[in-house]
Image (cartoon, rainbow, N blue to C red; front, side, top):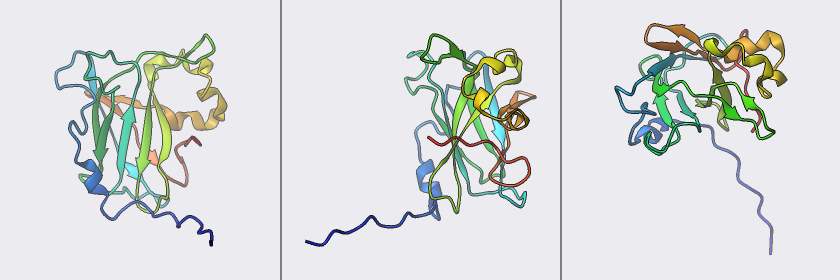
Length: 174
C-alpha cells in the first residue's frame, strides 16, 4: 500500500464571511453589560493598507458563567474597514505558577494569504503596573511591547493589527 502525504494547506478565503455566521458575533457580553467597552481596530497588510476582508476573534477566560458561558468569545470582520468587538476588560489570570498574568484578551487574526491564524494579545494601558511582571509580555523585546497595548479612546479602545512591516504586531507561536 502506498502512503499518501498530507495535502497542502489552503489560505484563508475567499469565503471567509461564511465563518462569520455566528450567534453573538461581535458581542462577548450582552449590550448594556456594566463596564463593557468596544474594542475597535483595523488590520493592515505589509504595505500599510487596511484589509477589508480579515476577521478577528477574541476570547478571555475570566468571565463568570453568568456572562453567557462563552468565556468571552467574540468575532468580527473588517468589511466596514475596521473590526468592532464588545466585551469587558478582563481581570488578571493565573499564570499557573502561583502568580498572575496582566489583564489581556487573546486574539486570533485570519486574513487572505495566511495559511494559519495569527495569535496575539491585547493588553490595556490602565494595567501598565502589571505589564512588567506578566510572564508572556516579558518574553517580548521591550521595543515591541507597545504593539500589544490598546489605546483608550471614546467608549472603549483602539487596537490596530499590523501583519508585517514597520510596527508589525507581535504574534505568538501557539
